[in-house]
Each structure stands twice: as structure tokens, then as C-alpha cells.
Amino acid sequence: MENFIDRIQYLIWDVITMPCLFFRISWIQSLHEGLSALVVQHALIGELEDVTGILADFCT
Image 1: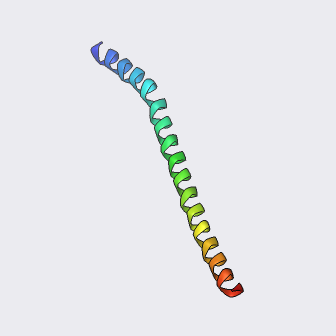
Image 2: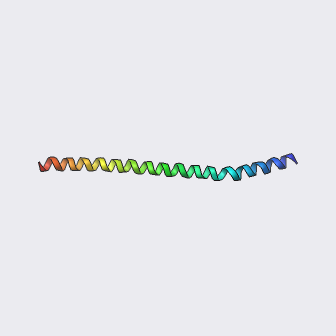
Image 3: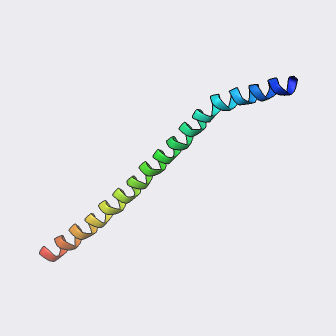
């Protein structure tokens, strides 16, 4: 009987913790995507500055 009660307690614990785990994973994924987007954006801005610098040198 105790084994049965333990299983129910574990099941309840899993039901409570699993959504938290999924939320954490999705939060980490969205954070990673956001950081990746920032890195790409930063790289694009860097390239744009290089191009405008070259154009400025060429035009002067």
C-alpha cells in the first residue's frame, strides 16, 4: 500500500514540476533565440558601418 501511495505522490510531483520544466526550457530557448538575433543584428550593423566607411573614403 505504501508503494502505491509513493507512486501517486511521484505522479503528483511530476504533474506539478513538468510544466515548470517545459516553461524553463521554452524560456531558455527564447532567450537563446533573442541573443542569436542580437548577435546577428550586431554583425549586420558592423558590416553596415564598414560599408559606409568605405563609401565615405571613396567619396572624399
